[in-house]
Image 1 (spheres, one colour):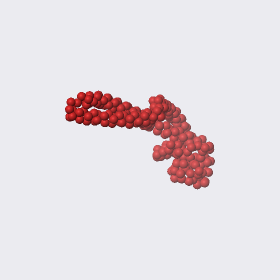
Image 2: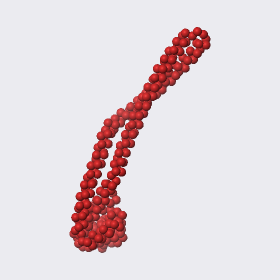
Image 3: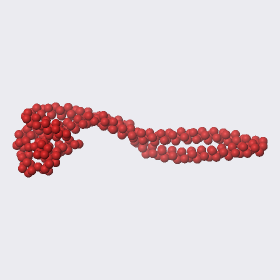
Image 4: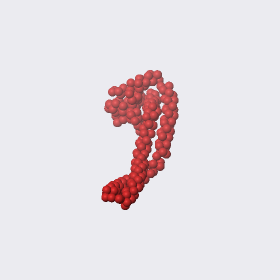
Length: 247
């Protein structure tokens, strides 16, 4: 009976691993999209700063063009002022000259503000230079690492399926039937549960001392009085199947 119980334990561990690998494979598209979205968010934040820099540059160019245009108007107004024929022409030229000078000063003030903002943007971009320079390579590395991990999971899944079939084929029919029935009715796929600290690791029900002794002897199949799972006590430290299934 000990060898048969050991096969059941091995089968459970294999099935638990298969469930883990299956989850990795089935959620691969979603996980890959999450990785890509994370990189896209980094790229978007960088583009947003770069767009602010480009907008600032464009606005300064517009202001400089407006200043140049107003300076040409100012030169004309100053000529009109110099060659005014009467009081009315003189006052008109003076008003125009004054308005243009104020407008140019306002534009120059805006340029100073834009330059200050531009310097702050450049500092931010400089502080993120490494992130910007390595963004594409890190994205490629991240996706490649994920894809490699996925291929490894697929290969391991095929290997574990083969291993499961080999172990299952050696089980006595009645044990195979009991195992399948327990797996099918269990949401976590646990049919064989380890006893940890005197309790079933699947349902956390405490076992009577006599039952713990029977489980440890491995002379017969002992099931949990609460959840009916087949119980075992590991001979060496091992992660519980319930914990592995939940991860």
